[in-house]
Image (cartoon, rainbow, N blue to C red):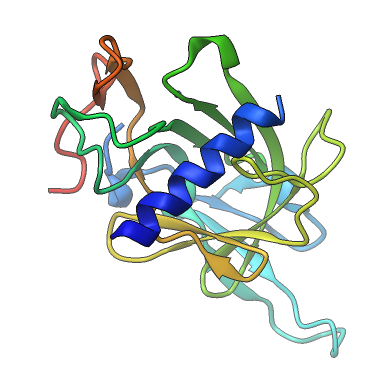
Length: 213
């Protein structure tokens, strides 16, 4: 637990020096990517199932393998064991609030905030492609000079995958980020470290507080 806490703190110190819908997974709209259609042009299928296709480049006429991306479409927030949602707890050392939005048009974005309002909101823009696993593989989006995640820039790779029926985790340059799990729904500050030794984060008003039950 000490290593995880120090890792989170180190990442956020780096941010300071270098410059927040329920899990109705079965009810999400479904899209299908047909032949010749890129991941940025997903089309709605008659069966309302969300799929993208991954072709076999070694054989021109090989059958395409469908990749169900319905699990990824929507808005997600980060959670870690030091700041459980809906509980006012002792400040563990620069907690983060991240909200991730993944859209069916092949684009995604994320915002990141810490206790310090002076640092403002850090924003990220990505494009994504689906691969078997399932995985979403990210590349820099509009206005981005490199692939970024949290305090890290110039990444070689950034991927996202489900880890159970509800949670998603990122893999950064081949290594998972296990201390930041992303779950459905947008989160907001309830107490942004005022006073500095306490913090509380919870679902934003109107969000489902039991998205994975």
